Length: 303
Image 1 (tube, one colour):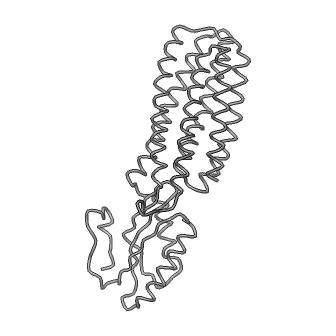
Image 2 (tube, rainbow, N blue to C red):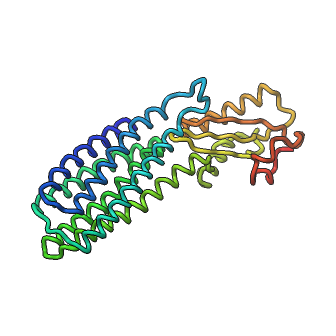
Image 3 (cartoon, helix red, strand yellow):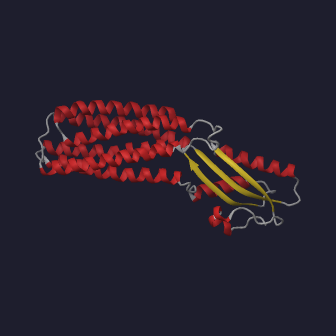
């Protein structure tokens, strides 16, 4: 599904860049120029995501034992930087054309290409949403966030061109300013999600609660799950925790419990890297480095 989403993103971006470039040359609209610049960045970002998603999906190797998932986060950071640069340039153009409005030519063609942009973007968003729901890809999520912002930006451009057609020439520049502000916000949101992954931020509380529930399951031999640590890495999820088991349980039985626990988690998180440590409940000495325990250090560790 990620492959289809990245191909769709590339195709839509290429079509929109070409069509907007032709109509901008015909019309001279700065709002349309703003939209074309955004589409050029979309194409650049889509190319980055295209390769990053494929690299991130490669299995772990001898040099990258935890996989290549963070390649997606780096691609998202690049996306955010490109969007931020675009926002800054459009801000300058929008201010200039608000104070010195320029008459728009071929307004009908300009409106037509913007409607085409909205239709193609809506189709792409449908494909990307399905891909994110199925894979959790942060790179595609970042790409989707950018294209989602394009819908509002395209509506602003249409308003600017329409206003100019009705005699309000400054609306073209105002529309460019609206697009610039929207792109700036989008850049921040995309960068924040990518930085969360690069900094190994814990999964959301509801996901952690779900993991604990799946780990325990209906197995009466499991006393509790503690010291849970999680992080996302592109399409991959890394999960590790301690499993408190009866101290009289044999090593063979403990291994069986852990394998069953791991399989329950893999059924829901098929791209998860899972590490389980068994503790003899009530008979284990405290262990583990306090530096990496954080809040988990205050919980019961099975000792």
